[in-house]
Image (cartoon, rainbow, N blue to C red):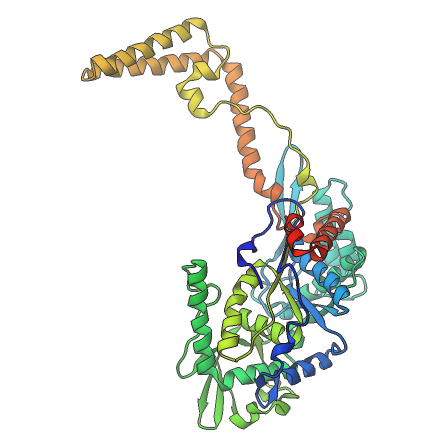
Length: 514
């Protein structure tokens, strides 16, 4: 079982998290007899695995959005290969190409001893308004320019995996974002001595009979399933003290029609929420308020009818899972072990609940792998110096902050402070005297500062330096940089950490997990 209290990103460099500490590929077998339409879940799983020729071995899977993700996400890929080797399984990476492109730039840190800044390099032809599967293509030379600019910008002489990532792009005449991510990742996996995971895109999975059956089964019972889905969300929020109603997902609308947790869209058009309504022996499909398809209950209820694309699909519409139903489909129908990051592992508490209470399917236990990896240049110590006196100290106690304070000004200030104490105790109501004393102290403080201009300039310069270092600290220490910006040596060290964590006994694993 997963210990949710441990689902926290490690703080130290090369710290890894594996939870649960023992991952069991046999945990899926106990619910294969659950019903989906007129067949069992085992039948649907078998059909999906056979479709992708994955039916000869167990499947260890992970996945992520098609983007330039950080090394903590890549740790899931490393763990997938290690576990697939241990279980004699096939490693699968599910590339989520059904989401909108999250970023149009690649963040590249420029780390120097005297400064740290962040470059944002535009991704070739990537559009924010399109899903990844609809992104336009670009020639490999355009992507190569991006990676060359990143290498020049970092410019510290470190041999990075970026060159290996770019080498994976050379065999293709044109590539969109999903092509680049999958090809480059496979090249890096080979460079690190891993077996590249089999890449399956969401757009491919959604073209299968198994996925159509999953959608059909949901739509046939939309009101009941939506109610169970909605009940799981507030329970999750209460357990984790979350106030926003959008996490882990917004509730579904139940009515006529009822919202389903799927997207529906045409190629190149904005996504809409899928709604369905049952009328006698018919089921109506809506993209928001637009009626897009009508079919019979009998047609939807028979697994054999979903072998070929629906008329809805042939007319240009496509249905894609939203976050929780995506995880439910992958865990229930594809993977014997599915490895999440921290966010997915948390949110799947709600997935477990609505799949159990609504579809009467108990999903296999959740697994979580992540890591914290910082750039080599960020590990180089920045030249330290003694902390300067604070601004408050210089303003109100300059005789302490400035070593070159003239003795006469130091003595004058001491007498004025003594007068201030006497006035507060003996002449507290004499506001004029107290005011004059305060102004005299203030003038003396200013005179002390004017008497040490060189020392004061050095202190002010150090203030500026400390402020700059503070502003640069997030840039220097971020764990969010693209995994291709790390060195081969660093990522091999990460693989060793993960191997040790996955092979250690539970009682000993904690020390190695970081």
